[in-house]
Image (tube, rainbow, N blue to C red; front, side):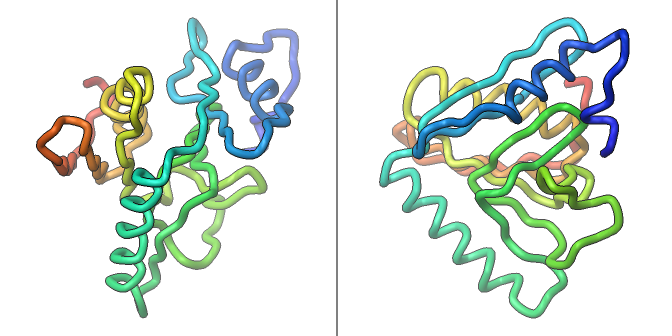
Length: 170
C-alpha cells in the first residue's frame, strides 16, 4: 500500500483524490469516502453521519455479528476505513480477521482484500440511497468483497438483500 503517496510526473486523478481526502479535516458528524474512482473520473463523497434510526439498526447488526463471531478469528468492525487502491469507504459494519494480517492493515485502514462481508444500512435521502444501493454495491464488487449485505428500510417494505459472488464488471 505504499504506492498511495507515490509522487511522479504523472499524478493521476485517483492519487489527487486520495491526497485531498486524506488532508480533509471534517467537523464531527461528517465522513468522506472515495467510492468509485478511476483515472478518468471520480469524486469525494462527503456525508453526514446517519440519524438515530440508522445507527440503531447498524448497532443491532454489529451486536448480532459480534455474538455470532465470538471465539472465531473474525470480528465485526466499524469506524475504520476499507481501502482498495485509491478508493476508501466507511461501511456501517464489516467482517474481517481479528488480528493484523500481512499487508492487510495499514495506517489508513483495512485492505478490501481482507474483508469477508460488508454491511450497509441505507441512509435517508435520495443521494444517500443511490450511494448505498448502486455505487457502493459496484465498488464492493469490483474490490472482490465476497458478501454485501444491504438493509433497506426506506422501501416501505423493510428489505434485506444479500449479494454474493461479486463480479467487478457488473
